Image 1 (cartoon, rainbow, N blue to C red):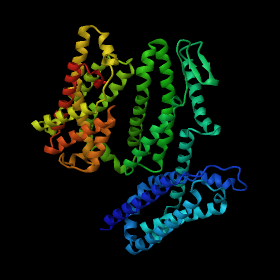
Image 2 (spheres, one colour):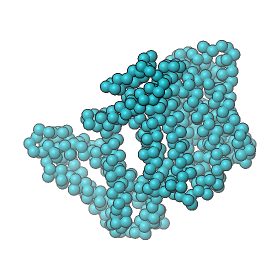
Image 3 (tube, rainbow, N blue to C red):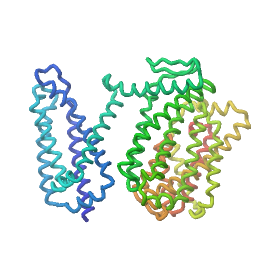
Image 4 (cartoon, helix red, strand yellow):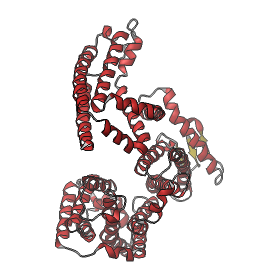
Length: 549
């Protein structure tokens, strides 16, 4: 009962706080920066940047929550023990009263047109004090004062580190992404770009002589093929992606990893992704110089970054689980023995398909002429693990065909109309081939769409992920078991795997419903194969090649 009351209280109070912040931020704009007004420059500057307070607070709260996750269960138990309805009622009234006064003060200061006399240090101090009182009353409405005092005494250094980490992350993001950043902030990514430039130049020097090297404008390459190291090429995007991935990974596996040792994965991952980015650029220039500028710019440029990110992400997982420095000793039996064989069998075809897709796309110049390799590689993976799939149940029902047909209709409704199908890279690529080569390629494309892709994706998403999101021991979860979390998250991730993410997400939901109906994975596979087969038939008969891009 205490846990349920805790969730309800948190939900209501978060809703109240969100409504209050939304009401204030949408009604009032921050005042302009009035530097010339007598004696109020500092207060005007602080009030001008007051909108950053909420962003900074969110970063700090998220960082503290992340650092406290290993002991979150104990904290929740302690909170449930301290729960007191009388405190909630009293402090909630005080919070509403404080917010009312704070809103009046905000209206006085931020009212348009701005009065410079309102931007004084006295009004700034009053505004900040009222904001602090409002937040404190909200916190005490959520939990008693004695709980917060106990939490501060027990976790003081974690809260300090969380505040520093949140502040540092907020500053870094502002410096990297703010479009109007001053010169001192722009120099941060420029320093990274220049370091990348020097490393790429050093790598190319091992292969080519007479390089083009203009550090002032960040240009490097060979005489026939050179590039500029821009913001996107500096490595910042890869660093951001690997950081987000590691945050999610460490939180999901917090019970199986050593802390704070696991935090070393951040500098290791960041250095690895930056070095991989420099190697990617050097290889891009080498391909553009010695093989084909088209392949370098159209295929390799788009896919090589994802290949590096995927490789480093998998490497971080393998390192953290196999090293005793990162992994808890008691977690090893779970990782090594439990579900290992079946989980590998369910995930491997999908991983092979993704890796092969990235490699074949990287070697293409718009038309993926190596697509048959995807089909063959995924087919080999499925064949290797064929015995592990026997226990999944492979009967079928007409309802699966109906669901697949409905997905096809939905997909076509959401498909944007292409202006000229003959100008798509796929259409041009097929026209450039001989008749037999084009026919063979189309046969492999249809086989991939109807056989290897549905099997590989459904084994991973509806066979493994949708149950893994219910319980760590996914084999104990019945395919009939429905939870909103597993249904929504697995469908969302399935949608993000596709270029048409909305249609992909809705399709993932339909395939999940096919699985839930009878608890047979084969229904999801048949539904998926049916929709893909109908799309393939439409593409070939109608020439709608954009459906296969």
